[in-house]
Length: 219
Image (spheres, helix red, strand yellow):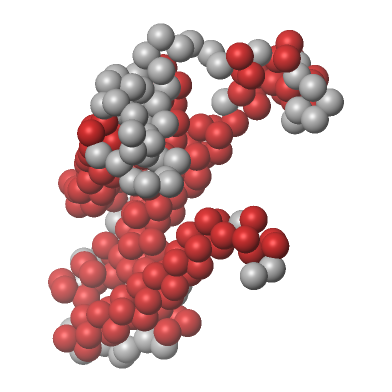
């Protein structure tokens, strides 16, 4: 195995799975959408044309939105809240880690840690900022795609005139789509936090070592 693959195997596996599942989603979504179009007497779309439809855009960004909200929120919450016994929590009595103190920066430290000031303030929170910015972009993508999908559906079913983005934002349909994903994401993370107190996965950094007591906090 090439060294660069070994050194980046986790990212390669995750991104590879993402691309495979995104491709499959587009294919099955394309087939489903064409079945719906045919039912209403509309011409089916080619696969490339389907990729630009609200049906596909909404489905993709609706899920990305919830994932990045969950991850961004989780990163922020774990900075300030603890769960005794969980592998997902920092130690109960820990505030900042010693390595978070900029006075301990070395020549090998990232440049914001060595520079201080505003770059350091931003860098100290850059992971949660990045995740929440992706969430915000996905939220907009969901809104735009959802508006297009809603208008297409209404036009096919009743010939109703299209509505604007702000109008769709105020519909229960949009928020139902969001909430059904948001609740499941936070449930999954909550389950991981609690299950990691008493359950183990050998060799995983997301789990406490097999022989560690349940009461010990942090992996």
